Image 1 (cartoon, rainbow, N blue to C red):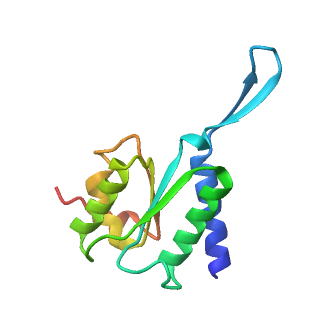
Image 2 (image 1 turned 180 degrees about the vertical axis):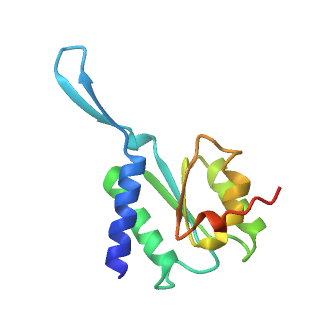
Image 3 (image 1 turned 30 degrees about the vertical axis):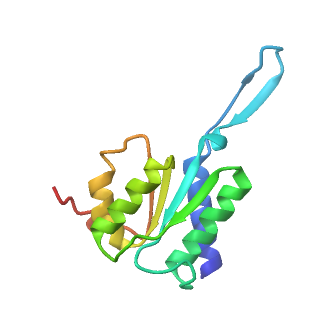
Length: 139
C-alpha cells in the first residue's frame, strides 16, 4: 500500500511540478529545458512525525525522493503544536524561506489551506488525502 501511495504521490508531483518547454536555441539546435531548478519543495507534517509509518512518512519520503531526483530544494517542517494556527505558521515559515511548493498530508490541513491559498497565488499547494469538504474557510 505504501509503495502504491508513493507512486501515486510521485506521479502527481511530477505532473504538477515539472514544466518543460522545447524550442530552438539561438544556434538553431533543439533544446529541452526544465523549470525544476526553480522549484523549492516544503513538506509539512500534520500532527505526527516523519517516522510514523503512515501519511507523514510516506509523503516525506516521496517528496524528498522527487526533489533529489529533479534537483529541487527540499525541507520538511513540523508545526509547533497540533493546531490550525501552528500549521498556518509552518506554511508561512516555509514560504518565507523561499519554498514555492508546499506538500501537506492529511485532512487536518483543510482549514490552513483555506486560509493560505489565496494569500500566496504563486505557491503550489499539494494536499494529500484532503477533500473539498475538509477545506473550511475560517474567515
